[in-house]
Length: 223
Ligand SMILES: *[C@@H]1O[C@H](CO)[C@@H](O)[C@H](O)[C@H]1NC(C)=O
Ligand SMILES: *[C@@H]1O[C@H](CO)[C@@H](O)[C@H](O)[C@H]1NC(C)=O
Image (cartoon, rainbow, N blue to C red):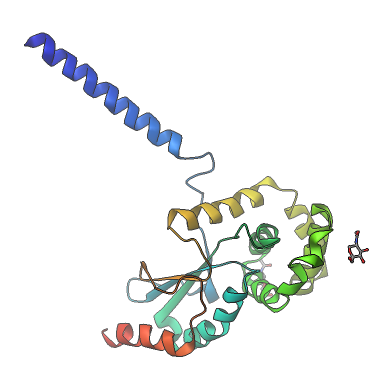
């Protein structure tokens, strides 16, 4: 009996070791990140009393582009009662999605007030980065193009810092964290929304203003 008991203890500690070491193996190097992923819109920090929308966008996704104006209108309507955090999910089947997302992280590091204007600039001129427009360009010349493109928003004095940003491995890692965070939330398409932590149906399609009102009105009314 005693020996059996001993054996069980040893077995248990093996299982324990296995679980703890496999948990470590699951977490890749730069995870968890230094800061929570995402860009906070208009510095609305939210709080226990405000409604939190999390949006997952790809800067070169047409549906993300189309969903932005009605969402912006809804945010304007609700003011500080609603806060928004945008996470980036660079989709592998959208040309240049990762490099565009990385540009947003770089701009955000330079000055967080650059982030949303640059996101809007990508939405406005997405077709510059699709298909044949960049199909015969090297990766380096695409980065150059994107630096030029983003300089229009951040200003000439930030052109070199933007360029340097693309040589900094940390900005690559940040963009990977965005991707990994999206994957960890089960997000597989853009746009994709969570309201107070729960996913909305209709993944991958733009929501119009009326839909936003029908989702948020009952929540603010309940307060
Ligand atoms: C960031 O940009 C805003 C708006 O252009 C400006 O008011 C602010 O001073 C800038 N902050 C820094 C740290 O440069
Ligand atoms: C890319 O293709 C376009 C049109 O097909 C051509 O005009 C241009 O010279 C090409 N650029 C390079 C770098 O090969």
